[in-house]
Image (cartoon, helix red, strand yellow):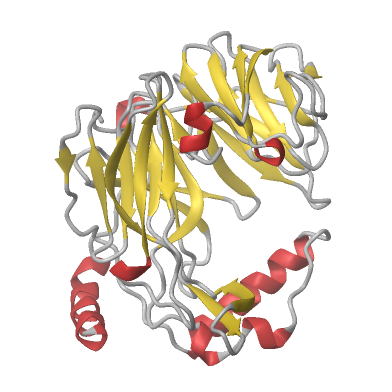
Length: 381
């Protein structure tokens, strides 16, 4: 079956390659923060134009003002009310209110604008129902979380058996709705058992260039799911209606020696540019059985929404297309364009009328730029 799917995908790729999507040009920046960050994990725009930024390596949770350039820390690390073990991504829950998960202490922190206003303890029924994990929030009072299943022993492959459930939990009532299954990123897992069959050791590692299905909850309650086979985007409306996207017109790239060498070269350049990276032993990154049969079409994790609600996610680089580019897909599942950036730039967040780009300099320091979003060139969401 896998061979058949690859053959069909490759047959489609020649016709899809000719359908190059339109290039969406970002307008010139209208603001830039001169404060340097070391590891940005979220940017959350407030109604007055300021932004909340999380930098767990250095500055932690701050509020930044583009007009004055001021950057001020919010609360501090600790175990008291309103304090956090380490700043995690800030997620909008309506207006200027936000939620931040305190992973280290398995609780949630609630903010209004730039103030901590409440601490939701680990004994709260909804925190227990989600095991403290919030992978998305909306202004309707929901938290998106995942119901994981225990994977089987041995080498894992991406099949329905390796899927997890997406769950939507209401913060007020605690009601939990099961939305759909998503395929997890496959890993190589080794389990050691004793004579009684009891697990005595377990280890797992991610396989090179493997992705799982990506999901993103919009503030308005819409859910986007980036599917793998076929490569498409499905949408769920706040009312629960599903729109299943057609296969996106993106060519399928077979994994060959040229692609493997290009991938290894990109990894080496990335590590050289990031002094804090820990190089992996060669035997852990180059085995032949670590490589997929075809290049995955996107990069995990780099997913945002545009101001009008399109989902934007990063294209997987390849030997022929090594640059940084992002797919833009509307709410009918159509690929409406691509955004191309420089190698040291990443799309990171959006606001009411803007998108935020993080620029990395030669010292691996991060700077935030704000760009007006080109609404006029795009169809409505």
